[in-house]
Image (cartoon, rainbow, N blue to C red; front, side):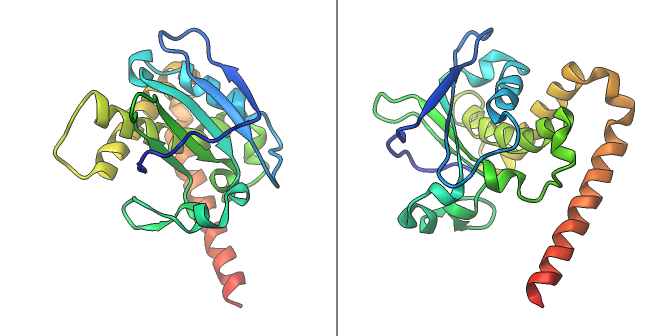
Length: 204
């Protein structure tokens, strides 16, 4: 989803992505959350696995947790297919504004919330989990800066997510492509079942 420009948050540490024409800083800042794997490594891999022109103009990808957002930040409405609160989102795109570069924020705890921990032990599934969000936000950037379309922002971003994910998977996991679609639908089935059981448990 895209969001209105705000001041870039102060963050704790950064890793600069190399090997691209446009360096992107990946920064982590967690409050009450500690990921069980190296999220920066995953995001670096995704950024360096797509054509560099698509991330030209993006300065930073900020990784943080939803619990670290202030009450005002959590309550703020963000745009998507359905309006919802920022604290419930997975990621946001902040376009360039008054001389500041564009940047992306990912709420890591929200991104991995519905993924079984056993799946996230495997890099393929970690890549898939974050590609679904990161490439969607990059889709907003492409729509804003490179390929203007007179269509719904979210629909355009979703199309670019699918294109970038397909490109990344073909070039990174080419040896797994015969099994890719079978795996994809299997994961979607387990995620749907997991979400349904959580909802039933919550309702009772």
